[in-house]
Length: 168
Image (cartoon, rainbow, N blue to C red):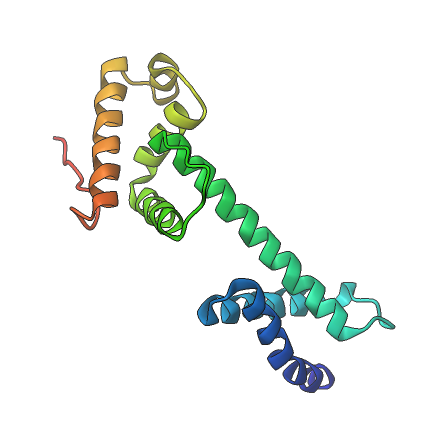
């Protein structure tokens, strides 16, 4: 891969400049360039031998950016569903709150995330979730209540990780 090393090194400043123009954040731009280079190296066999390396890398970087943007929009829609808010004007504050809530959601236990997704996103009834987990409906309701409470506390910064109850 030595023949590949030098051309890639020469293009990194251009890729970073382009990524910075897309993300407007130096750290995000660096992450985007790294993801682009990783994808390029793993897909090197798919590159046309007569194709322009610079154009190919810019295309990969741009697709990576669009994919990340779509993911963040999906997360924002999921957050709207959880919070019930629907502001038509996206703002920096709203984006930060969405990212914070999604980070809090990720910190919940697997079971709590699953419960919230099944009931809040997928629209399953308590009875359907109880059948999935093979537990009484009341257990689903109490676990869901604790999951919602943990999410609220994590989102508000009250706790650092959800508490686990030890049952005997």
